[in-house]
Length: 192
Figure 1 (cartoon, rainbow, N blue to C red):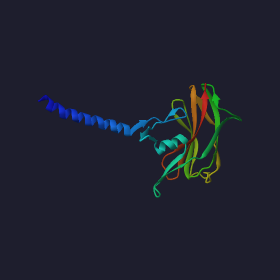
Figure 2: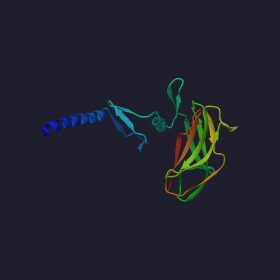
Figure 3: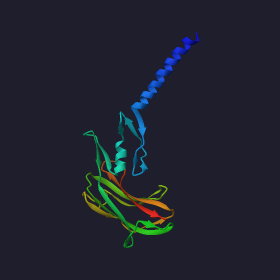
Figure 4: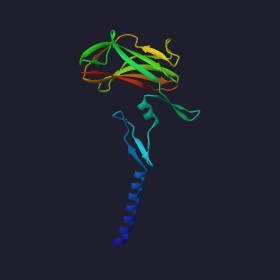
């Protein structure tokens, strides 16, 4: 009598465990690491191929990702954005901890193959707290309308590097028709 009850239970457990094992072999999560940095979103492995979200790819290459609903396609545009920082007449990339620095960010942009409606420059401390430096929107009279332009922050920006570590200058762009800004370039300043 106990065998009659045990047999259906054993069969049910075998089916359930084989289903879990099969599902695990078909798709599994994969960590994505780019330049020694783990990407927030995980990829998945399906039938020996790794798949990553388009948004993650855009973030990795610092490109502008947009969806074209008419043609049902994802468009990734990677502009060239080169930045450097100047304190007075000297470029710099490192500072002393607790030093207050007045500086300007210069950015040279080319190969911009999509329309944008805004851009901004920010600085993030080693803990991720972001501070706005400068930017423009398409409503500003001097907003660039071509694929190749220069941008200089409007005046000396004063910032105190309170902690030791890496501070990140980020250049953000907002594709036309999008509501979100996307990082297209970063520059690191080291505070010791």
